[in-house]
Length: 184
Ligand code: FNR
Figure 1 (cartoon, helix red, strand yellow):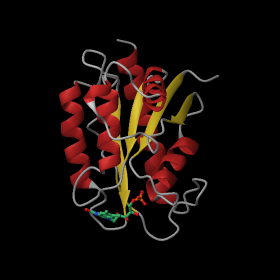
Figure 2 (cartoon, protein in one colour):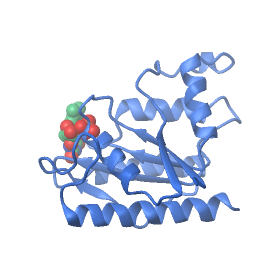
Figure 3 (spheres, helix red, strand yellow):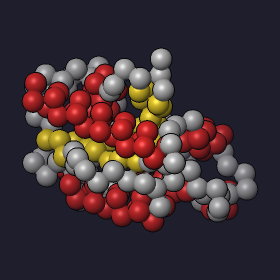
């Protein structure tokens, strides 16, 4: 029986995103009583506060995804040493209308890049944004994944045992973090 629901946002819009593969790996490796589901961001228009009283349906669906989740997981690439614009745009939609932010849930950040930096810089920037939302944010363990060729298959199977063990531990820790904060 599922007892925790974690919504995840993938910061890349690419059909072949290595970060989507990482999200699917975490979904496969999560504890049996934890369900991961995607909160999609790819069809959101650019955020405009003129629309705060009349959100487009796609933005309402985004906020419903946050509402449906016990915790939020951000799985993001690093673009030009920071957060991808598409992900920041989704966060702006989720943060409004004023006084109705969806961001305050227990949250964590993880990401994959093809370089050794493993999205560390983007994650620092994203954590700064999430700190402003006052969401409880898991600081440890950190997850900086260098995506070597074929590390994770398109359907989320991890081909390296060490990485698989690490990701299983990481998502178990985040599940415990969500359970602890959701209970408060
Ligand atoms: C990148 N990439 C990249 N990698 C990195 O480690 N630091 C960076 O600052 C950047 N900058 C950057 C900008 C742009 C516009 C692109 C398209 C790519 C490389 C990046 O790690 C690689 O393309 C990943 O495949 C991106 O993740 P997704 O989109 O496949 O999930």
